[in-house]
Image (tube, rainbow, N blue to C red; front, side, top):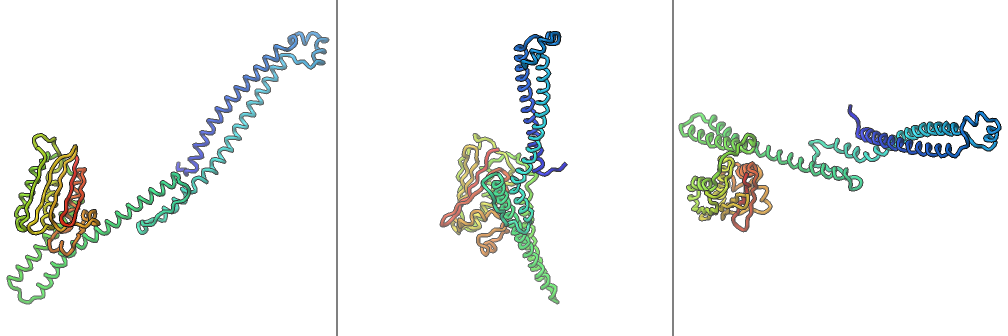
Length: 387
């Protein structure tokens, strides 16, 4: 049975009131009855001779009546009568108190729940179209006001999530639409030509292949971000070997810009405790970070990689001599499709998902990643706890 909060509170308070009233009434009744019995016994002990004497002796009988004295049996009957009256009166008063208590509880509960009703009415007006609307905080600093503040904070987080999702969807659409538009344009130009040479076919194939690869990369990276389930973390990770493997693969890319890569290892693989995770994902995270440091670095620059352990954490710092990052972009660079310099990013290539994938992988390993940047160069700081 569905009851309103007001009725539920009234019902609970009524039960408590009934129990308390019963205990109070019963204890009062027995206490008063005991007092009546004591008074009755005292009166009987102070009375004149027994009822037999009272009945058999008319002269004595007349003197008792004239003196106002009452025989013992009459005192007992009077005590019983008073006890019966006491029981009846106690029950009547108890029922009256319970009834009055129910009415008062119902009325005061309704008054107390007015702020809840106002809050409920305002919440009903909120939809996905006005999540930025804030609920007014009425009344004193009580639980209802705390609830209102918490709800407003939750609305803010939901609104941010909706906006982020809208932006994400818009960016995805843009990233997918651009190569498709290029392919379609090239096909339209190709179809308009009456005479088609073999070179035209080759150019068309090159454009289609290039943009198809771009589409495939975007789709793969989107799947990497969204695929958080069913990931196993059972691989025994050797970070020394993992970092060397990544840098060896990127050595040729770094040499094209004459960038030197230094690795400072302070973890003894033989004596350090085992770390378990997903080696493929961690490889990709480190690959994306180091590749980014190469892409956005200066010619003849450097990349320094520091690997050490601190209590229960693995620490990896990747420092470069690149273009640097503004402080206001520290958090934004980990968002999908965010680019600090859009024109530069287009020339270099990439979908803008690399750092977002890195953050997702690090978070999957219960770690965190942050960035520091100065006049030139940046440092990415990774901390991953032992599991």
